[in-house]
Structures are given as structure tokens and as C-alpha cells.
Amino acid sequence: MHTVWKGAISFGLVHVPVKMFSATEDKDISMRYIHKVCGSPLAYVRKCPSCEVEVQWEEITKGYEYEKGKFVLFEKDELEALNDSSSKTITILDFVDLTEIDPIYFQKTYYLSPDQAGGNAYQLLMTAMRDTGKIGIAKISIRSKSSLAAIRVLDDCLSMETIFYPDEIRPVSQVPNLPEVLNVNEKELTMAKLLIDQLSTPFEPGKYTDDYRAKLLDLINHKVAGEEIKIAPAKPEANVMDLMAALQASIEAVKPIPSDPGTTTAKPKKRAPKKTSVQAVAGGEAEAPAPAKRKKAAPKPKA
Image 1 (cartoon, one colour):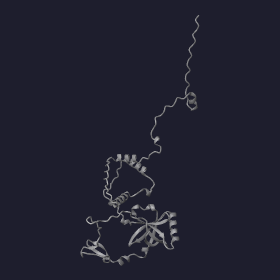
Image 2 (image 1 turned 180 degrees about the vertical axis):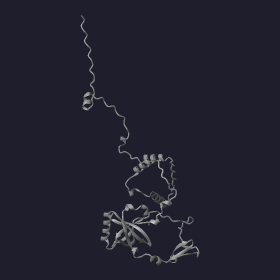
Image 3 (image 1 turned 30 degrees about the horizontal axis):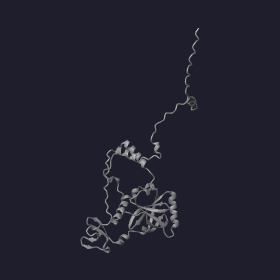
Image 4 (image 1 turned 90 degrees about the horizontal axis):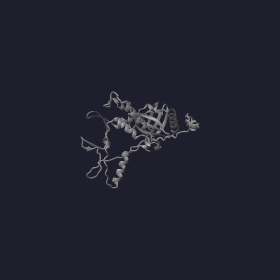
């Protein structure tokens, strides 16, 4: 891994020398703009619209547009002077519970490894945070940009998530067309909860894949091989207007398949054989004995 930052974690008077590595990578397939006429890739030129000349990097500085078309300019050393000695320190300000932070604040994840002779302090901080179940809220400056960060234990490694400052989060009140009054049908709500319950499962990140990227890579390979590719248009999805019908169909689609299909079909009951009086008594049932047939009286002798 490439080291993106070197410094130290500071909590109280304890300093933990660390190196920072990016924990994620963007696997998006990069495309370039090509001139159709000749097949050449297009280049982006830094050109001044006033001087009508191409501008070199050494002639470029940074500026802030405070009014339309008006800028204040800054030299590189002026901006670097704003970073004090803490620019190489991850300063932990507080320890909090991870559940207290809404995911909307998280930006990018980094791994932190011990640097130089900081192994003991690194293990101490990691073990203490794991045992207490706390994460550290810190300040850090990366590439001249100040950011909040969350330091936490991930497996046997300290990790850091940069997080937005509160004033960088747009309030929900700015979202248009939100319902002012919630009006939910109780039957539909019950069905929706049942569907959520049936779709609920432990999080297994390995089962999720980027289908679009896989199809694009397959298409690229076919084109490199010179094959002619025709992609069938996707079938338009049916617009289900009946919400209750959509919920019912969704629940039916995710119903678990029973392990023994034979148990789902009710077989016709066989009529039980009639029990004898002995069987009835043995089985705890009271059954009256069948009445005895009367014998015909013998005819009287004639006188």
C-alpha cells in the first residue's frame, strides 16, 4: 500500500506515531473522450481566455471569487502558513459511542499502522478502545484541508474515517416535496413490515457485486477481440399502481421454500377403522357394547 500521510495520534499527552493508508479503492472503469474522426484521445489544455495562450503550471496560483469576476489571490506559502504544527497530528478531542454518529457524516476510510517505535503505544490505544467500546473524535489536516475524523478499531487495526463538519451537512428542511403529515394505511403498513421482516438478514458484503462493471468489462473484452456485440434492450418494468397488490406480490416472491415440499400439500384423511370394545377401552374411550340378539322362543308342544 502507498503511504498517504505520516504523523501521530495524540490523546492527552500520549503520542502514537502512525502511517496512513487508503482503505478503499475506486474500481470504476475509466473512459476517455476520443475524436471520432481520427480516433485520437482528447487533451485538456489550460488556456487563458484573455491572453489566449496555454498556461504552464508554474504560472498558476489559487484565487477565491468573492464577487462575480473578482478574485483575491493566494501564494502557496500563504496557504501553507495556515497549517501549524498540528497538521501532522491526529488530535483526539473526545471519545464517544459509534452508534451516536449518523452515517451521513462519513467520507473516506483509512488504515493506520504503527510507525517507528510506536508499536507499544499503538497496541495500548487499540486495546483500550476495544475494551471500552469507544471511538475517538479527532481533528486532522490532509493536503491542506482540515477535517474531523473518527478513530476506531477494525479487526486488529486502527482505522480512521474522515467525517464532515456539521455545517457541511445540508438540513433535511431543504429537501422539496416532503410530506407534512404522515398518512399511512394500517393494512399496507402491516404488509410492509412483514416484507421487511422477510428480507431481513445478517450483512454479508461478499454477496454484493457491481453487475454494471462486470458487464462493461465483458463488453470491453469482446470488443478488443473484434467481436460484433448487440445488446438486447431491457424490458420495461410494469408500473404497478396498486400498492397493496405490489406488497402482496413481493411477499409471495420472497417466501422461503419449505425443506419438505410434501408437507405443504394436505393429503386427504383416511377414515379410521372402527374400534372394537377392547380397543376402545385400551385407548381410553368408552364405547357401549353392542346389544345382544334375542333368541326366538321355542314353540310350545300342542296338546
